[in-house]
Image 1 (cartoon, rainbow, N blue to C red):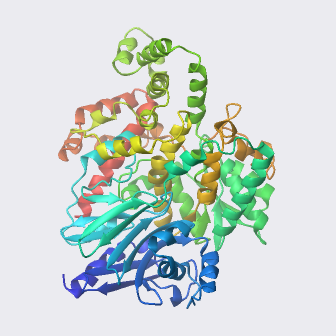
Image 2 (image 1 turned 90 degrees about the vertical axis):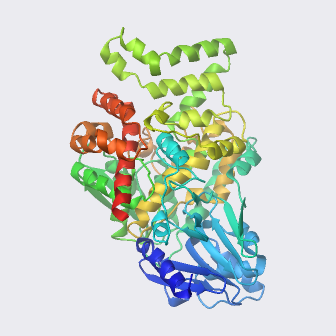
Length: 635
């Protein structure tokens, strides 16, 4: 490929990601080595041209394109200055390059506290380095198109590269219909992969091969922690937790642009904002979304917390029409299928914040780290209950519960009242049966996290995601208790659903989000806690709550966990009915050759018949159908 062709391809790829960086753009090419780097900049630290990318190191050895923030760059800069290095500007990008020169790429990675995805070319060794942050806050796709190794923050950019084929990976599709997201290392396209969180890829020009390894592992952190702090008193741990969180928040408040925070009024965001406000000389800007439908609305809780903390609070109330109108935007915002219905209000929250700030802190992470999801509490209860039950009795109970699912449910439906039959939440019963049967083995997370045990039937040709299952087996290194579920969520659900949802929604409107709870020191602290300080008195995030009560009146935040739950079953049977019917007609379902039309139509009939627990599966089909249509328009 000629220099002009390389530069043109790189520029086209960058232009597809203008939303991620509207402030500046450039391309760097070294045609002799066949390397081209393209960057779109969202200016956050050092708004001058000294922060321009692609950036070259002072010794001309390294060139980098980088998305994200290195929060401890000031400390690293001071250390590097002591070693004789001098800096031209004030950006964290220049600190990264200098760290590579001083310590090498892999040693520097171990020192970075941040969220990032970067590509760095070492001109001396002729090595390309790709790396992703520890928890997967920032995305990084890579793969081979013809004889070219390509990488980008989103698939949109890779689609712009000449020769891109876009064949759908059926193993990835099986994962999507099981979880409503696609987990690393898969992407929706064959031959294109997501770099695993905490991983670095090294491509050597001399042999043309890439080598990937983990420079940091959540599973290893969890294994090393293993209740290490169980001998400390709750009061001692609260002092340590508050210090760690305060420092994490402080680091993430560094910006040369306006900064604020998402505030839902729940435990996580309320604690985060309380610690922000305590360290801020002026009222912190906070943002929340409200709904006209009182069944969904939690904005009043957020407003009361904001008033108690003294923040400058902004809220926006959405109508059902506002939410429904966003459905059509999902395929373009999320250029890989992602079917978490909370992506709709998340996008509106990002839009609201972006009108006032360029950076917003978010409260993501504590659920997976401190035991916040109701399923953890439920699993903890079942484990405590079943510990005293002989294996044979547990097996019998599991089998009896299984009668209320699948074929057994159909048989029961013939003899029991239809209303009872409709109200049975088949998936909750299936998961309880699995808990009794498996007792926290390595495959338990697969069962509990799955939307449905029969999701494979929605595909015409389901394929076992062997690479994912091998990874799941390899990573399940924590003790045989509810920690296995938390670890599975931290490895897969957190980066590929929660963080992907927030990143794409925010970056679609050029908003940077930062998550203080995902600081490596807090992650290590959380995994060193015993389970009893996470789940206590049938309540998750126990220790976090005790810290929050020191900053916010208890009555303002003590309520059941809600989140951005959308009434998708009601919408499907109501305002979205025509759209659903159109998307799920026989021809639409069979045209791609990927879906089992009969099974999908049966699932839709179940939702129409009142089985709300099946609506998330239908939502996955609808999102995938919309995504397919969007791909066709782009071709």
